[in-house]
Image (tube, rainbow, N blue to C red; front, side):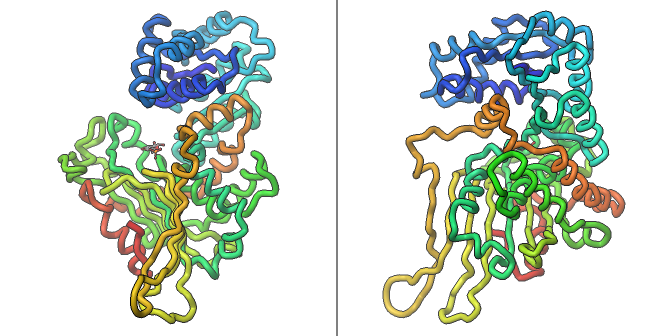
Length: 474
Ligand code: BG6
């Protein structure tokens, strides 16, 4: 595995700890080698020391010990490279020597402006042989056009079956459990449609701000950073039809159909069905935090959104008339990621206080699926209250360590299984839907609505639902 951007945050914070865990669990082939590549002129020992520090901070104390680290470090090497220089790739090819039958995984944990260069240089230096695979992370472009250019450049070197586009949300256990829930249980299928479901909410709320990623984030914003990928992928998994088989092509064919069935949001709909916000100063967990435009490397009069709420329609028989409300933001009151399926009210009310059932699929902070049903409270009369039927996944499988999303995904890349990765046409269909919203914001010059850090987002996001007699599940 060759990790470009080997000294960057993604490599040190996510990829190496995930590989360490896989090594510790005996999941890596004994011949697996990891070569970190970056521009810094440092030695193998210096790199290993840096990696050890970061892994120790990332891995649970009970899982980290010197002997396991030492055996992991034997796999880990460092190579200095300037990814824009083709000569450096010839040097790399000589360093690697003949690869024979070995699988090579090129993980591009770099800024996306290097993707095209790296792919081209891998080809010209003879490193993109039939056993090689390439992994790229979002942002895959900032618009449909730029995404197509990246996909074309990568596609000119690697055929689609060897391109792995990571969306780490698909590696999360609860997200895969959503597929198990839908496609391995008869219970929900008859109800999983318009007629029984009133609406669906998908929220990914964070308390963090932009940390030290201001330069990237200010050019991106919540729509490109979260909605175009993570939220739309979650929506696809909720809304897709059952695939004929659980394999890469069937699953991705079904997801693609949903992306293609999203009703475009353009013209006045951008005004009526979208809300964009930006956080101002406030308090998170008792701590004062600055406004977005005072964050490091952010423009002082930035109009980048740190919050988005959307009302989305899917033009299919199953989902006709069922709104999907999507919401994501930084510096919100609490960190939660969840999908809430709101069922319809019973057709005839026998008891006061009957509330519609809700199925809550929680990804974070805890992994949990719960079904809210109405029950009778003890004592006289028929006084009802919601009670939860709870599937606590961490508890149910407590003997098993919870895998980080990257562990699962890295292993899938090594094994060549792309079921949980985004196909080229999916990424492009998602941009095709997102672009008109971005354009609408730009054309109408809709400034982001301010919201205080530590709040639930701008008021307009509440009204988006309230005007239709609904409210966000907090
Ligand atoms: C990343 C975004 O893809 O996902 C970040 O770039 C965001 O801005 C992160 O904070 C959220 O991931 P998670 O796994 O913490 O929900």
